[in-house]
Image 1: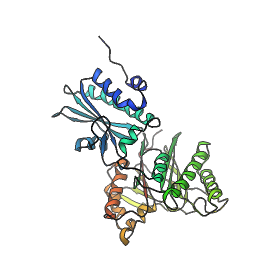
Image 2 (image 1 turned 120 degrees about the vertical axis):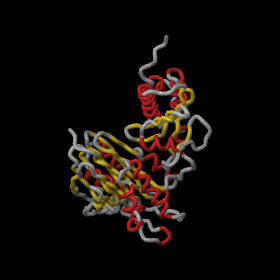
Image 3 (image 1 turned 135 degrees about the vertical axis):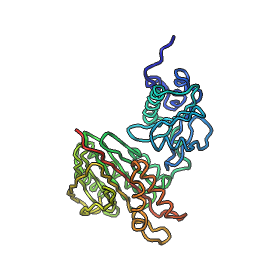
Length: 380
């Protein structure tokens, strides 16, 4: 009698990068009481789920979306379906949908969830070597500027014991220069949010220079002041002050909640604490690349356990569709309050949907970025 493999990882690693869903389906049908398998991936707007194996039609019903939003397994006893989140380090990719040949128990759900976890890691790793999964999640053609931006993004969410983090860009298929970036190393989280200058592909190229300059410095173990100064010098040497990038840089100590910040422009930060939302008061310095040899200083503040840090570009807080009052005055705080009980990955979507509603059919004049960080607790 054959013995079930303890892990699907080796089976997936042996598969070509574009055939991971088929490999996972074969593994599941061979070793588990599974009849049908579907891999559902979230589109770029994080609003619908699309199948990889089946017909190319939206497949995100209420149960699928509940699994995706809650990040918990969902069992539908009436149909024999089990839905499992596909997630890597907090980054939500989609849902694994299974139809079983018998009623599941807790042990079976746990084993199937382990396969879903291994499939999610494999899908993320394979993304650099095949276009198949990107073709599924793109529901229309990207502009060249948006193509550059999506290549730069670190992911859409990230999580650990001490924090939850998520970001979202709008419009997904035609964004320009706004951007976010993050990196986690040694219990320190570096977070940057950029408000790009200009529009179209020139804005995306400018942001590309800025982001890669900051990454170059960060990966050489430079602090956020050195990251800002290297990026500013790189932008100025290329554009001679004719273009610049407004940027907020944070280095967050995830153990004690201490934060160092460089405020170099117009992205705004707010703190949600104990039901209250207040602006974070920082002294604004010059945008990156405005002048040669610009120098920057850090400012410090303290997060408390349970705090939520929100960073928004002017495409959110200063949006004035059809000449209406700025969204930041009329609707932003209200939208943020509605997200109080939502995790960051859901909260950013709620605010972006409210921003879309505020435009009421009027095209956005500027792209928008929102980043949400929850610092959960103090642990060693």
